[in-house]
Image (cartoon, rainbow, N blue to C red; front, side):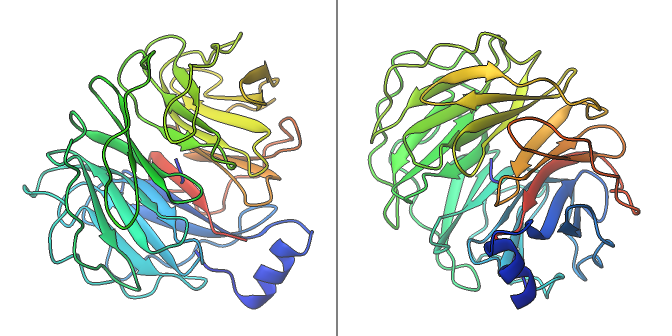
Amino acid sequence: MDPITLNAVQGAAGAGGGPYVGDLILASNTTPFIIAYPWDSGFGTKYANPSTLPTNVARGVDVSPDGANVAVAHYGSPWVSVYPWSSGFGTKYTDPSTPVMPGSTSYAYGVAFSPDGADIAVAHENSPWVTVYPWSSGFGTKYADPSTLPPNNGMAVAFSPDGADIAVVTYSSPYVTVYPWSSGFGTKYANPASLPGQNSFGVAFSPDGADIVVTQDISPWLAAYPWSSGFGTKYADPSSPPSNTSNAVAFSPDGADLAVAHNTSPYISVYSWSSGFGTKYTNPSTNPTGGGQNVAFSPDGADLAVAHQTSPFVSVYPWDSGFGTKYANPSTLPPGIGNAVAFSPA
């Protein structure tokens, strides 16, 4: 995807084997563009909005591995906004000295911290299509662009779990571009022998780094490959593919399940995963109400959140090798389309 810090009590609860307690953050197309709630097997009272809002539609959100910062990719300069987080938004960090891209009306679509929290990547419109900065409680000097650029609009970006690789998905062939990463871009890896079918919007590495999955907007709506410093032979397509264009994908923390958010009912599909697609799980008894834009598992894997196009704009379910009964909607709903969702780390 994907896709915020806990206080001491929350951290102890989340890490000690009990239900995950933390925060849920949603990127929206409507002001204030970023919305956050406490999460404890249900929504708490919405946090206050940041004092300085993102400038326009928010399309991507990520939380630093230590939970101390939340990053938002959005339309309009500065295209990425980062806030300290401690059970609420702190004062927005200074924008990067080298902008993500030229043109105040341009779009940023995705954002990701590296696993060690030392770098932050933004996928965006306009060359170089992906931009990465060092991160240490603020933006460092922009890294040099890759010598071989992605072909066009960066729609999403992800680091491998070990931080040794960075993947960008795009609108044009080869639809997924992956580079070695070590405080800068290495030489682009060879394209997969069997390319994804068409425009890609989401990408995820498995938690063990052994697989990479890419969404697409042509049947079977996603493509999955073994990964070991390069693409292996594409896995067989799922026997029951998603129903339409897939927008985002996420692995459960244990790597045993793979969730896909897509445009038509049931809007969310989840598969068992073991070096390939297993059987699709039964749809939830209460589906999300509109097109699935993004998906995230809680850090303990016990909950599954879907950001979607229709009110209530975010739906969350208990997860235990299948969907439980949908949690009650938040008392203060998001103001508009949920474009991305993330849980804070445990």
